[in-house]
Amino acid sequence: MIVRSAGGVLHLISQPAHAALARRIMERWAPLHGAARRQPILLAVEEHDNGWHEPDTQPSVDPETGRVFDFMTIPAPVKQAVWPRGVARLASQDLWAAALVAEHALIIYARFRTNPAWNEFFETLTATRNTLVRRSGQSQPQLEHDYGYVRIGDLLSLVFCNECQEEQTYDRWQIRLQGATVMVTPDGFAGRELPIAVTAREIPDVVYASDAALQDAIRMAPRVTLHGIVSGAA
Image (tube, rainbow, N blue to C red):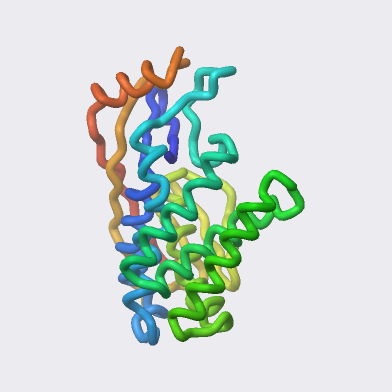
């Protein structure tokens, strides 16, 4: 779950909704237009967070603070369960897309590699990724090349959805938020601006006594649409 604070309310954006926005953005990403494996790459972008469906449909609160857990603060066992589940689902559709999502998980959690509590996660997911690459008939260098599109799509959407105020850098790309506009340098959209939108649930920004109280609030919450723009920086 992505949790945005907005003046007395919280906007809750599901991880799959963020990923769907990432795909809509990357469909317009000029460097991807001629990619050899464009369709599985776009599928990986769209489905990279499908393993979050379960925790996002039953969101929870920190029992010590009563604040809503987001994708960063939710306990490690929940995070670790997301990725094998999501990769397995995607593997039934496309082996290469599943390999890209496994690679994504290994990279975004790389900071935990020295933590013994994450050893099994890395061992299992690395073996899964290697098997998927082999079965797909592709290679690790091809995976590393194609993964760049998954990462840039994730960041472009996440900077908007999470209202990230810190500039994000990946490879040669710099991404920053100005108001509701995501600026990327160098320009990956061939001079075009792309209107974007994502749906969120709007709940009061209060302390919640329990998971049940939070889930009751979400059931009664209105849906709102958050609008923005993605653009190449001038």
